[in-house]
Each structure stands twice: as C-alpha cells, then as structure tokens.
Image (tube, rainbow, N blue to C red; front, side, top):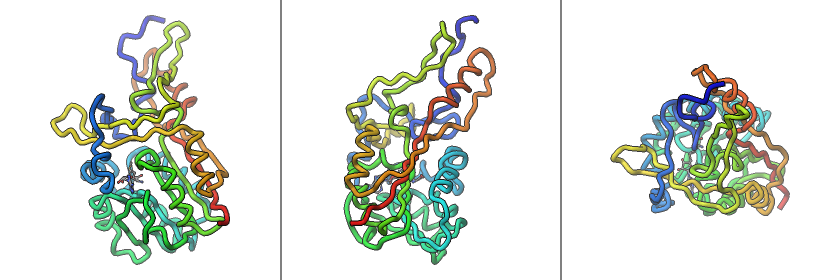
Length: 293
Ligand SMILES: C[S@@+](CC[C@H](N)C(=O)[O-])C[C@H]1O[C@@H](n2cnc3c(N)ncnc32)[C@H](O)[C@@H]1O
C-alpha cells in the first residue's frame, strides 16, 4: 500500500468536547482558560456559541450517542423526579419529559445558558431551572431526587469531588446518578492524538499524558480574534471512581461509548479509520447508586 498522501486525522472528526462536523474547539497552547477566571459563571462567555452548537435537539453527538445512552442507562423514568447537574441550555429537558419525568430541575453556573433553557422550557410547570455553582451546596441540592444526570460536564467543574458529594445529597438513598463524560483514558485534549502506523496499516491512539491532572484551556473559536476559552479538567479513571465512592455514590455500571461518525473519504485510510472508530471509545458513561447516609 502506498504511503498516505493526505495528513492523517483519525476516524472522522472526533470531539475534544464535541463539535459540529468541520468545527473543533482547539486547545490553545499557553492560553489561560476563561472559565478559570470566572468559575462562578461557568460557560457564560461562550454561552451564545454553545447554545447555537447544541440547539434545541442537541449536537450530533448528543442525538446519536449521548442522549440514547443516557435514557438507556437511566431506565424507567415515569413519574420520577430528576436533577440535571450542569444542564447547560437544557438539551436533556425534552428527552426526560418525554420519558415521563414528573419534575425536572436543571442547574448550571451560567446565567445565560439557564436563560436559554428558560426561553425554551420555562412555561412547563414540570420544569425548574436554577443558576448555581454545583461545587458548592445550596438550595439547588437541598431536595432529594430519584435520579441525577450530569452530561459532558465532569471535566468542566473545578472540583469534581465536591460536585459528587453535592449530587449525592441531591439524591434519595438508592437513587441513580449518571455521568457521561469524555473518555478519561483516550480523550485528553492536547495530550492524545491519532497516529498512523504505515507498516501495520493500523490507526493508533497516542496518549502522551494521563496520570497528572492538567487543566487544559480549550479555545472556542480557534484562529479567530475572539480568544474565549473554557477549562478542561482532566482526571484519571481511578480519581473519578474513588471520588464517586467517597461521595457515597457506588458505581453500578459503566459503558464506553463509540462515535457514530464515519469517514466518507474512502481510500487507504477508510478501513483503518472505521476499525479505530469501533475499537477506541470517545465517551464514558458511569452509573452510580446513592448509598444510604
Ligand atoms: C459542555 S457543557 C454541558 C452542558 C449540558 N450538560 C450538555 O450536555 O449540553 C458544560 C456545562 O457545565 C457548566 N459548569 C461548569 N462549571 C460549573 C459549576 N461549577 N457549576 C455549575 N455548572 C458548571 C457550564 O456552565 C456548562 O453549561
């Protein structure tokens, strides 16, 4: 087989968080994350961009991978009370309401994202939307719920251990908590990459850094004047599972989630790209049960 003629990219567009095809937020070497400067407002500076990216029905990763896995793992929701931690602009609201949730509470640090969620759902009496920092206790976690979900945000909060404890408090004993996050072993922005082994004709995943827990700035509009960025807090799998256990959340399930995207390019890379897409997961879902206090 001839040597590859185009730069090697890996199986389709892969998310540093998740992105529209053709747009990938980029880590910006040396830049300071915007979110680190104003953690209390979460993603407020990039709220308009995020709201547009996710829209009413979710990014393509939400629609094809994240939301189906969330509903599958949470199971029967009819008549239950649910809290959506780091709800953003409310992508999970409609799926949960359709699944029969009796009362939905969404909480996020960004007032603008909460405002977007309210514009879509505030009329619904089953929906309550709150602005709060989930690393701190508050009225948001004072009432216990049957289920909690936290989608694509474990790596966005500065203190995951505190968030886990606060989620535990927001659950009834035996309640379920579901976390869907970037796969902590394979997706470490700036420190994991696709590579091509021309001898074996195999696409491989290269991991440069895993054990230390870097805070990685992700620019929202790479190459543009607007230098807004968010902070990605990488954490090892051991730290995540230990943090959950110490918070009183016992892991009962784990699913590794694979991209639905496939390269349309054809040619020498396609077979290897498809294989890699089926072998290397992009997201991880962790299901936990709230232990009695
Ligand atoms: C990638 S977005 C995910 C939003 C939503 N769950 C989704 O799947 O579209 C991460 C969210 O975490 C929120 N966030 C980050 N730190 C937070 C904190 N300390 N307290 C509450 N929300 C926070 C951000 O404001 C942002 O909405």
